[in-house]
Image 1 (cartoon, rainbow, N blue to C red):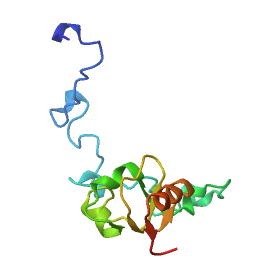
Image 2: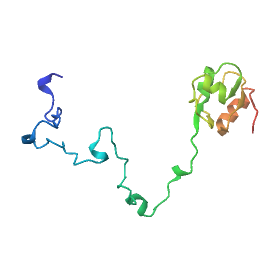
Image 3: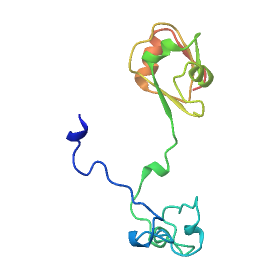
Length: 144
């Protein structure tokens, strides 16, 4: 794409504040007089209404959202277990292999892929298909 082919409105001209009264944005530069909003570095929290009870807290909660009650859980497939060094698969070995984040607390092992050796598994949750494949390969489960 060339500069002359850029669609109209793509390069919006920035409003120039504090460049004289004739501009319409001079003097206080659209910030009003004094107060936190007139100062540099001020940013308002979303939904903040100056200390007044915000609208989202006035209105009743409606409906059900299961995300509020879910625990964050990392998932690992059987095909990824080849990246783990050694036969023991637990929270620490999965973190070292880079398969889960360092702050993960719960891990679920899923049955996608195949197992090439007998692993000793010590994770929070295991799917039924993953359990069958690991036991078929001669693997064991430490915590059940």
